[in-house]
Length: 116
Length: 113
Image (cartoon, rainbow over all chains, first blue to last red):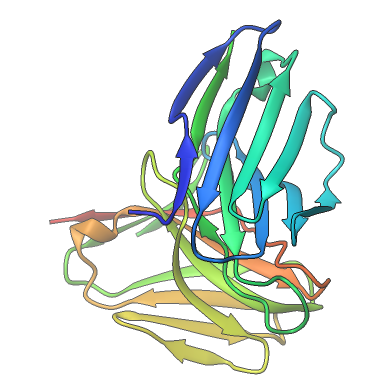
């Protein structure tokens, strides 16, 4: 089992809905990530939080809004999504993402999102 | 054998064979590389990593080889088992101060009993 927990596992939402994806880790990691993965494609980076501050936003549309309430939690707020946003949304964490001592990312099992 | 289908490249092997999965990475400035295994319905699972100051690293039943001259990474799995069937991704990180991994396209490994 993964040490990064994501909820819900599955989510179906309409284009006018507002929903949130949640991610939790208790490994003491200080960097947390959101990735998006379409079927049969590699994960693509969306956001990076380092020490609870947003460090990287990969030009993600504003209908996706990340939030890091504390070092263990990461949320992704969704509003006015499009059907093409349907994908697997993966959360990951790493011990420390700075300098030459890069550490591996540990992934959760994702939230399978369907936008109708 | 290995084939490039409409979607993911696929490598089909028999149980007990050794498997070699290849990856061409894109950025000569990348200094850290990871192999991930992703089973259906799950997130990527860390297998093994290697830093750019090494050319080989071994784990349990797995070996990663790095050739920086041609920007090539390979994953060797010894005595492949049906449980090894999954999609395998290589990922690279350019030392930008964060572990912002960029994933390769992935290879599906199918192991028949």
